[in-house]
Length: 160
Image 1 (cartoon, rainbow, N blue to C red):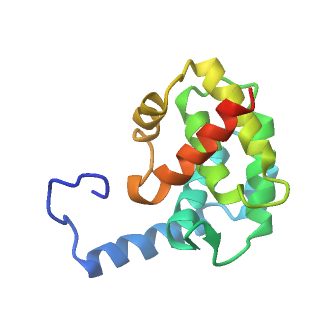
Image 2: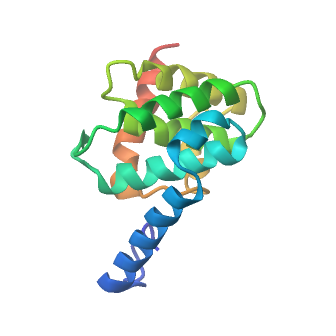
Protein backbone atom coordinates (compact mmCIF):
# COMPACT_ATOMS: atom_id res chain seq x y z
CA UNK A 1 0.00 0.00 0.00
CA UNK A 2 2.75 2.48 0.91
CA UNK A 3 5.82 1.05 -0.83
CA UNK A 4 4.40 0.40 -4.31
CA UNK A 5 5.21 3.43 -6.45
CA UNK A 6 3.69 2.14 -9.69
CA UNK A 7 0.12 1.90 -8.48
CA UNK A 8 -2.11 4.78 -7.60
CA UNK A 9 -3.31 5.34 -4.05
CA UNK A 10 -5.33 2.45 -2.70
CA UNK A 11 -6.90 4.50 0.10
CA UNK A 12 -8.24 8.00 0.10
CA UNK A 13 -7.22 10.33 2.92
CA UNK A 14 -10.22 9.56 5.13
CA UNK A 15 -9.74 5.82 4.70
CA UNK A 16 -6.07 6.15 5.58
CA UNK A 17 -6.88 8.29 8.62
CA UNK A 18 -9.43 5.72 9.80
CA UNK A 19 -6.91 2.89 9.49
CA UNK A 20 -4.26 4.95 11.29
CA UNK A 21 -6.43 5.95 14.24
CA UNK A 22 -7.93 2.49 14.55
CA UNK A 23 -4.50 0.84 14.51
CA UNK A 24 -3.00 3.19 17.08
CA UNK A 25 -5.99 2.83 19.37
CA UNK A 26 -5.95 -0.97 19.12
CA UNK A 27 -2.21 -1.17 19.78
CA UNK A 28 -2.57 0.79 22.99
CA UNK A 29 -5.74 -0.98 24.12
CA UNK A 30 -4.35 -4.43 23.29
CA UNK A 31 -1.48 -4.16 25.76
CA UNK A 32 -0.48 -0.99 27.59
CA UNK A 33 3.27 -0.31 27.61
CA UNK A 34 3.62 -1.08 31.30
CA UNK A 35 2.17 -4.54 30.66
CA UNK A 36 4.59 -5.06 27.75
CA UNK A 37 7.39 -4.20 30.13
CA UNK A 38 6.43 -7.18 32.32
CA UNK A 39 6.05 -9.62 29.42
CA UNK A 40 9.04 -10.09 27.14
CA UNK A 41 7.73 -12.80 24.85
CA UNK A 42 7.59 -12.68 21.07
CA UNK A 43 4.10 -11.13 21.12
CA UNK A 44 5.33 -8.29 23.33
CA UNK A 45 8.30 -7.77 21.00
CA UNK A 46 6.04 -7.59 17.95
CA UNK A 47 3.64 -5.29 19.79
CA UNK A 48 6.47 -2.91 20.76
CA UNK A 49 7.81 -3.07 17.20
CA UNK A 50 4.42 -2.05 15.81
CA UNK A 51 4.20 0.84 18.28
CA UNK A 52 7.70 1.93 17.23
CA UNK A 53 6.66 1.71 13.60
CA UNK A 54 3.62 3.91 14.22
CA UNK A 55 5.57 6.42 16.30
CA UNK A 56 8.47 6.62 13.86
CA UNK A 57 5.97 7.07 11.04
CA UNK A 58 3.78 9.72 12.61
CA UNK A 59 5.63 11.24 15.58
CA UNK A 60 9.01 11.87 14.02
CA UNK A 61 9.97 14.49 11.47
CA UNK A 62 13.41 14.73 9.87
CA UNK A 63 14.63 12.16 12.41
CA UNK A 64 13.60 14.42 15.29
CA UNK A 65 10.98 13.14 17.70
CA UNK A 66 7.90 15.29 18.07
CA UNK A 67 7.40 13.60 21.42
CA UNK A 68 10.00 11.86 23.57
CA UNK A 69 8.40 8.76 25.00
CA UNK A 70 10.97 7.48 27.49
CA UNK A 71 8.86 4.49 28.59
CA UNK A 72 8.74 3.17 25.02
CA UNK A 73 12.52 3.51 24.69
CA UNK A 74 13.05 1.59 27.94
CA UNK A 75 10.59 -1.14 26.89
CA UNK A 76 12.32 -1.50 23.52
CA UNK A 77 15.72 -1.94 25.12
CA UNK A 78 14.44 -4.41 27.71
CA UNK A 79 12.65 -6.45 25.06
CA UNK A 80 15.69 -6.49 22.77
CA UNK A 81 17.87 -7.72 25.62
CA UNK A 82 15.46 -10.42 26.73
CA UNK A 83 14.84 -11.70 23.19
CA UNK A 84 18.44 -11.52 21.91
CA UNK A 85 19.20 -15.15 22.76
CA UNK A 86 15.95 -16.44 21.26
CA UNK A 87 15.75 -17.48 17.63
CA UNK A 88 12.99 -15.35 16.13
CA UNK A 89 14.68 -15.15 12.76
CA UNK A 90 14.00 -12.07 10.71
CA UNK A 91 11.37 -10.75 13.15
CA UNK A 92 14.09 -9.82 15.63
CA UNK A 93 16.10 -8.07 12.91
CA UNK A 94 13.06 -5.95 11.95
CA UNK A 95 12.40 -5.24 15.61
CA UNK A 96 15.91 -3.94 16.37
CA UNK A 97 15.91 -1.89 13.15
CA UNK A 98 12.54 -0.21 13.77
CA UNK A 99 13.38 0.23 17.46
CA UNK A 100 16.77 1.62 16.47
CA UNK A 101 15.13 4.26 14.29
CA UNK A 102 13.12 5.40 17.31
CA UNK A 103 15.98 5.38 19.85
CA UNK A 104 18.96 6.30 17.65
CA UNK A 105 19.07 9.90 18.86
CA UNK A 106 18.67 8.92 22.52
CA UNK A 107 21.78 9.28 24.63
CA UNK A 108 21.58 5.58 25.53
CA UNK A 109 20.48 4.35 22.11
CA UNK A 110 23.76 2.64 21.20
CA UNK A 111 22.32 -0.72 22.27
CA UNK A 112 20.40 -0.82 18.97
CA UNK A 113 23.60 -0.60 16.91
CA UNK A 114 25.10 -3.48 18.89
CA UNK A 115 21.96 -5.63 18.43
CA UNK A 116 21.78 -4.86 14.70
CA UNK A 117 25.42 -5.90 14.29
CA UNK A 118 24.86 -9.15 16.22
CA UNK A 119 21.65 -9.99 14.37
CA UNK A 120 22.98 -9.38 10.87
CA UNK A 121 25.89 -11.64 11.66
CA UNK A 122 23.64 -14.43 13.00
CA UNK A 123 21.15 -14.12 10.13
CA UNK A 124 23.87 -13.77 7.45
CA UNK A 125 22.46 -10.47 6.21
CA UNK A 126 25.51 -9.06 4.46
CA UNK A 127 24.29 -6.23 2.25
CA UNK A 128 21.80 -3.40 2.56
CA UNK A 129 19.80 -4.91 -0.33
CA UNK A 130 19.46 -8.15 1.64
CA UNK A 131 18.46 -6.17 4.72
CA UNK A 132 15.77 -4.30 2.79
CA UNK A 133 14.32 -7.53 1.42
CA UNK A 134 13.98 -8.80 4.99
CA UNK A 135 12.58 -5.52 6.33
CA UNK A 136 9.91 -5.40 3.63
CA UNK A 137 8.38 -8.59 5.03
CA UNK A 138 7.31 -6.47 8.03
CA UNK A 139 5.82 -2.99 8.49
CA UNK A 140 8.37 -0.72 6.80
CA UNK A 141 7.82 2.37 4.63
CA UNK A 142 10.77 2.94 2.29
CA UNK A 143 10.34 6.70 2.06
CA UNK A 144 10.23 7.10 5.84
CA UNK A 145 12.44 4.35 7.21
CA UNK A 146 15.06 3.35 4.64
CA UNK A 147 17.34 6.38 4.97
CA UNK A 148 17.55 6.05 8.76
CA UNK A 149 17.65 2.28 8.52
CA UNK A 150 20.61 2.53 6.16
CA UNK A 151 22.38 4.89 8.57
CA UNK A 152 21.89 2.39 11.41
CA UNK A 153 22.99 -0.46 9.14
CA UNK A 154 26.16 1.45 8.19
CA UNK A 155 26.98 2.31 11.81
CA UNK A 156 26.53 -1.34 12.81
CA UNK A 157 28.68 -2.58 9.93
CA UNK A 158 31.42 -0.02 10.63
CA UNK A 159 31.45 -0.89 14.34
CA UNK A 160 32.70 -4.41 13.60
